[in-house]
Length: 566
Image 1: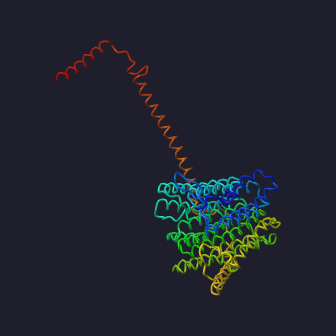
Image 2: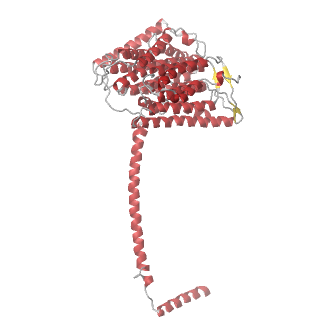
């Protein structure tokens, strides 16, 4: 195990250092420096061997491995660097030094977590991703965004606390290695929940569907990349073949289609679509075969590309119009033709031939078929068509086609167009030449992606989906969503819990007021009784004759003597 690091820095550390220095740089230098840092950091990563473990001291007698590099980590680390570069290029002209610093710190933390070889190092970077990512929501300003940021941070910190508890249990058991875990053990269960929060598991996903739409126009692009794919990497590393992940993934694929179809805010539609595609990866991890893990890694790469491209397109729309609500948008292709084209490429990138999503989903579908999960295979095929419908065609149609009340006056800034063009190029290159990706997956791949049957089946599926969408829109059966906010399980703490707190406080005040009135009445009654006996006119204040007193003393003494002698 080597004990030295290139420049004595782990992967991602250059981005963290850049985040710290960003506020000190002149404004004119901050943007270009932020854009170049991911390229320097990627070069630094390439100075490491392809397979290496690097130790770094100990923690209460247990050895630490702050850096572990292998094929699985390199896939995620490389796409994270590319996404950071494309995202910072996209945001070059549209955000200040504070957001540049947050984005660099966020990307560097996620990269550090991917290459962590022990739970303590993972925990440190895990928490850093929470603290840096929430800034991309907070800096938007306004009460709604800041409330969303606080709820986002609460769940993120909750994930970190679960990870910390698992770390302590593993330390007491004598190992801090970040390896495979048994989900039936206490530490394994805690780790699974910690990873599940950041992977958007059902009931734990609301930080994603609320936080991403509340972020800045450029911040949502970074949020769509790092946290969830970092969690997918952690699940693939720690829990391959955990069968009940199949059920979790199925729920993620199904329920998101319903909410994405009804949602008005198109960035929230993309957030539901993101969870849907995470469900594909969770199912593949649950299958656990070598082909399935390859499919997970490959789909994480393609998902980063097409989902960030869609968020980039809507970020440009938000910049030019101030909204991303389907009920207000329409016809933007006239003023923003390039953005509309890139958005269409993002929608096609999900599963169309010649795009990266086609190749990666092929691996997951093949893994399900080889594992004799015919039902899962059919569900994944239907889910692929469904998400193309509700989070692809819906976004393109309602934002850029048709008619709406809000119009853009000009195209997106050149930096945004450059970021979208770069991401589209990568999406197409890996789609046309999937071997460039397959050669770097964790396990050897012996599968032809572009077979006649698969291409024809996928084209038929997409064309049928587009035809159904066109018929529904043409007949007026699929209209623009109604304005407003659509809640799912977060209704419990955004509506029910505040109502319970307000109602409880009201009843508490009434009870307190009633109790105070009752106590006051009791006190006044007691005072009246005391005044009757001990007041100036009371029994105890009266003057008694001496003869009466002597008589009472004689009676009491006689009673005492009778009791004493008899």
